[in-house]
Amino acid sequence: GESVGLHLPTLSVQEGDNSIINCAYSNSASDYFIWYKQESGKGPQFIIDIRSNMDKRQGQRVTVLLNKTVKHLSLQIAATQPGDSAVYFCAEATINQAGTALIFGKGTTLSVSS
Amino acid sequence: NAGVTQTPKFRVLKTGQSMTLLCAQDMNHEYMYWYRQDPGMGLRLIHYSVGEGTTAKGEVPDGYNVSRLKKQNFLLGLESAAPSQTSVYFCASESPTEAFFGQGTRLTVV
Image (cartoon, rainbow over all chains, first blue to last red; front, top):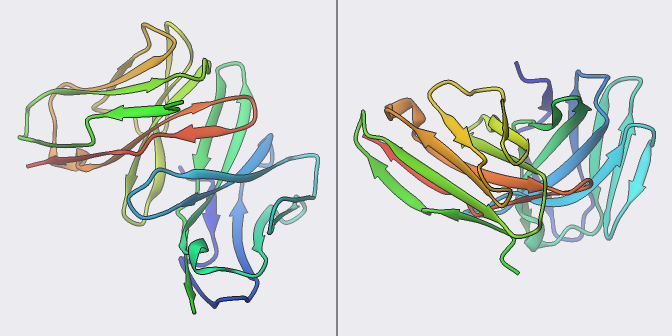
């Protein structure tokens, strides 16, 4: 069964606002977590990842926070732009003898209005 | 640099027909994956491969077969297509730190 989920299927924000997209996971043995962005008609694109031994990682305009105590992952987008409108997926990765498999959550649709 | 290329991009099959989806990557990655994406379901892992000649089942493998005869290619086969296999299929290859996805194949089974 699915072990990664999101709190909200849709999120609407105004241009310039900060966006926070949340994800809950259940597998405490996951080695790292990734956020992907998927625009309409395209494949998912890597945004940022975070290893399980970290609690925060920053990229360009994005920050990922990991709270292992409550098994919660969030993606913060600063100064959200219309080009950020997309579906955002969190994924967990577990490395084992068979390799690495990515398990995705259901996705949050971010809509940015001008 | 092509990255991950999927062929075909679109296909309509009749129930019971067979077909093969091709995924090719030029990044010399060991790990490759096939996912299907359905509305409200996110991406679900069908099969994956950790290297040439090896494959493993994912979350939803039934009705599909895969082969990894060459490192750069990962093939997904449907032996007898069913309407439940109507979906968008994504292939991905992975470096140690990042997965790269193809543009997807939209398959309709009627």
